[in-house]
Length: 401
Image 1: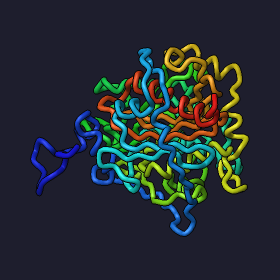
Image 2: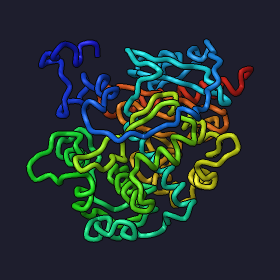
Image 3: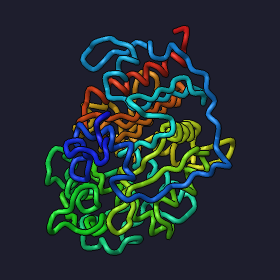
């Protein structure tokens, strides 16, 4: 990253722009400088109500043995060193036991969360539902009638929450004209091409239907963007302010976050949030504590409980897809991934290029990893990181085992 965007002005070969910020050599710089690339809305914190993070660094955490996907046995710090880590935090029983910042990252540097943002939006939806402002079983058109003629026309909010719409949308990042890349052009994450809709919401109205709603889980970022639109309409408030008032301030964040917005000012719900690692850790601790902070409920406990105890239908919707081979026994509910392991089931928030929030109730562990993988997806990096956090949690919760 050292040569990216340096000089006055930067040399042409070192510049990072809208066309290339997601390309491998540019990712590390870009993910820390989103405000310089794309317009953003601020997500204010409250500096007068910062929740302290107790710290007692355990120098042995990195030495935890981990069996990698390829069968090799290594240490946790080896996994993190090999997977383009920018920031790493581990909390056990609410205490920070590991904290590292790498390759120029600091504890004050905001970092793009990519699709970890989806889980934040899912919690906003849960809070609105608990307050009676949003009905998860209602048709999407109850809140956004503009999509009546699209693939979302007969979907429900529940279909959005669990990514079980039948909307025609391909999430193949390596294909320049897959729907996810066309949506990025419309929402200002890539240069717009002739004929592209202007703005993400206009784009969502153009999507058609591939299958009936309510069938298999299919990962569609568009479903989260539709969910965010529904939340804004239900609350009469833009997403940045919803996250601020419903989550960021109540959880005691120490620094403002932000979320990218499209050419007409709509937030990019599916992956646009940037935040510091310590505040993401606070969000993880909130989830570990069943949505409560100091005895005050922030995210409804029943929303999180219902997410972690899926019905047979939810599990079957996942089991019949390619995701089962990577995360066996898992499921997707309310914008969270759930990954069983030998020490309980972890709630996981994931983003491409290696963003992860790991929460395990059984071991009392929260793990944060912000990364700059050169490629959007890498199964070995993903599984090795999950195994590292699981192994660390197991060792911390059973030190004599």
